[in-house]
Image (cartoon, rainbow, N blue to C red; front, side, top):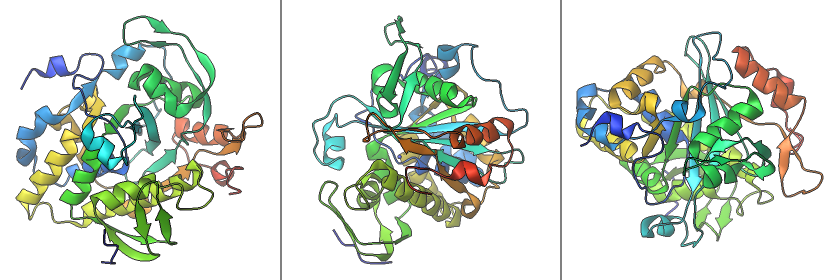
Length: 359
């Protein structure tokens, strides 16, 4: 692979609790979901009217009930942008390197805070290896799944499903999640290819046999396959941990948003339709966004956000004393960060420092 330089039926039925489509296997690069929202406000809605049935809806609000954190005291919004790691299905096995792992785990998670005024955004990454307390949640069969301490954050999706991931995030942060978005593995690759690739500055040579990624340092334009490998790579950079990969994912998020914002979607209806088709086929949202009308309205409300101004932060974590292969939320930094999001106020610089990375 060249490395040369330059993610019919009634609406009511789709909004019932739980995903209504069997997806072929899920994997994430979460910036794609934000691309759809941030670009949506500047596109022609009629172009997407036939794509409404592509979107899968999950009724998070019904699943969680009323025992939740209060909404923001302002017009700001909080989104949980999630993806999962599944190797089920031939196409996703091929993209994932042919692994045989079953089930689905949340591979990457971002709490995206859009402050009042909706002219900027903050994306907080939650490391997949973070040990959390999973609250009691409603199981797929209707019964309750009991709470459990010291579970890996990325296992909650596989164990109980997306609504429980939202509940876990709300419990650990006290932040009310207004919307949920998810993208699948194959859909991300198709979307990056639909926009013609993404250009970014690779800071160091990457040689990762696990993901198959070979990149030289410097300015590179990545296609869908390379982009997927880039946001997945761990072994080709740093100490091989998930904490190093988060930095690449955040860099790619900003580059992807900038790429879409720079394109003349209005000037090319065919390209716009192809991009929207790829995105909506891969997209799962909460019931409140599970239509193109709702998605377009939300997109217009955040269209003033400049990708260059988006702040990316990793949840402050420290290595767990009992298991150095896992991390836990670092206090008081994590508490200060979540408090700022709950109150829609500026995040203190001290709350952005993570003991696990020395930052």
